[in-house]
Length: 165
Image 1 (cartoon, rainbow, N blue to C red):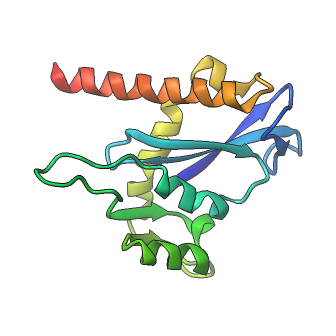
Image 2 (cartoon, helix red, strand yellow):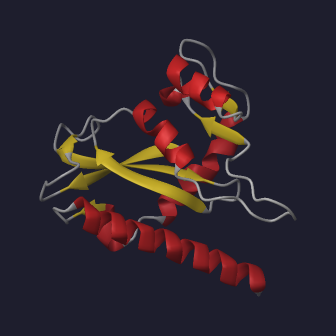
């Protein structure tokens, strides 16, 4: 899981001063994806919202994971994150849900090899750079979320098409 900043030219709901863009109004996309980079759930918030507050919502927003015979798994097995997602509350919530956490602790060295694993999320953010999503022009967050989910569906469809050929 990770977050990405998007400039919001016209403002509206779920916009706030961006910490990376000289306090101009912006939004933030919080994304969780699988190990191959397929987007599972995206949340749009104001740019100044901390990523820790959206961690549990991202994990809970995942659809059931099917594949093996029997009842489908409801939760993911492992969650990877950088130091921005490190807090006692997040760790205890993930522990309560029996999810393995691979999150670097604040004030310590990074976990070796975590950058290679987190590259998948950054690659998925690069795939989400459609013209209408690179800069947020919609005032209503519902419209922007619909375009974002359409873009995620398009990415999933392209991956499925590529896997079948």
